Image (cartoon, rainbow, N blue to C red; front, side, top):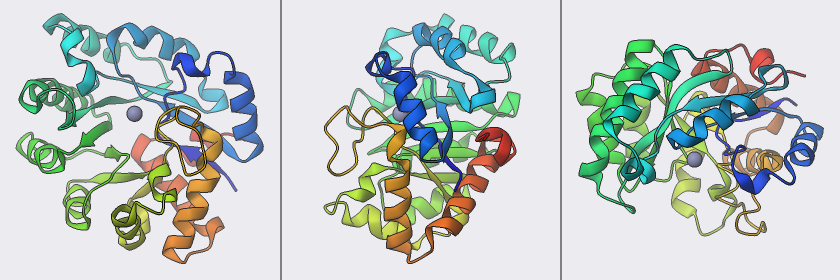
Length: 262
Ligand SMILES: [Zn+2]
């Protein structure tokens, strides 16, 4: 089985002491690639230097809604310039979006809109952080006439909200949340959505699956998320693994064997 982690903060310092071991552990379980989202301007250089497409280490460039306050207008210009001269490891714009639990949505909106416009101009996919803001995120994508590919990462919302995103061309990111019995709503949603709309992700080091200590999440847990998803959907794991990898391949615009090389 060939697996892929569509959203993992593998550049974060939490992995500094154990990055090679984690990567080897993940590969040993068939997790042959991952995408590291960009969250703030000072980290972009680190992402580019950690990226290694030949071993499935990819990245995105963007400004996360939690960190908009640390940035100025000129950083959007730097983002655009960095995206224009991106190397082959850079696959998408993000992670950008809206978060109703942290900061002000109105303050975050111009940053999100600017990144949506950049992705559209450069014909790049978009990696979206949407927390307690699904309706506002969908409204913004609609008002910007978004018609590209996007990932709504770590989705946790209603079935109807997921369907709105899918109508807008988005994929739904399925992570460790579904391994927790208390996440009944999200489990029900991912069990019902069409399989060609789902991708697997860990969002590591955060979003620990059941039984994993806070901050200890890693791409090694992708097989657990797959197993849980397959069980919820009543589908064989092997087949589902192929479908979700194909979805990640379409989302990020690289053939599956390039995205997650053996
Ligand atoms: Zn993230």
